[in-house]
Length: 286
Image (cartoon, rainbow, N blue to C red; front, side, top):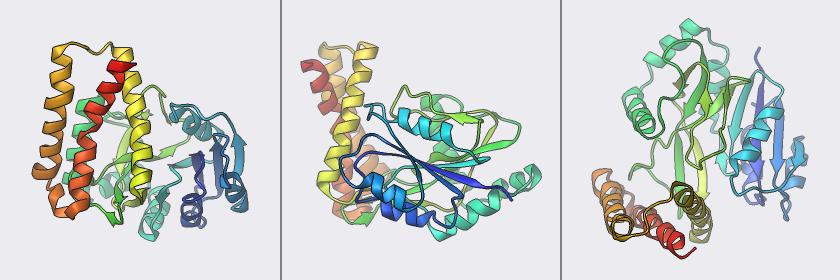
């Protein structure tokens, strides 16, 4: 039977980590936590679940600590999680089944996914942005897991928030994070498949938490603008102050039906759109 290492990078996650680790207690043979020098009870909570804890610095590119955690895993399969993600019982059972399947069984399983069309549509969007994910042939060495995002008291369904895929289940030694971009996908040797069942992502239980996370992403966007020497002239201003935010707001609220998620959907679309002018303003003034 294949064993699973659950790996997590943390920083001040005492309000989330217990739920996360509780959800994988019957799945993980090994838990690795790389902590970015938390000042709360994160490390104590991790140790109470028997995790192997490694305390490091807290880099602004948090994928660095995620990759350190991946590198420390000792089992053939690795489930990489964020502390605010929760594995459902349905997903737990699916993971256990999938890692025992042969290549032929996996090919048959992938062909029968009930949300296959939706998943492949989102994979195409990812590949249009980031380039091809994995190889066209070979063994399945990684899997996207869909996510349902929690925002202001509700798990969102629309506005392009689902399936919000992330490569989370990987074969040891067959995938890694380049640690160059906050939006980057894992580099995978072999094919990338999908799991049908979703995980729960409690990323924004309060508006304060959302703004905190949003601010972190904006800072990384500013760094990318500096690296790419984004235009600071009139063209750059029109694109980032008008075109991008208006386009994104209408895209997520109307075309992707974010309005059906109620006021949470409207607020999510608005502040998601505002990341463009906010990051550009910081770039202009830094």
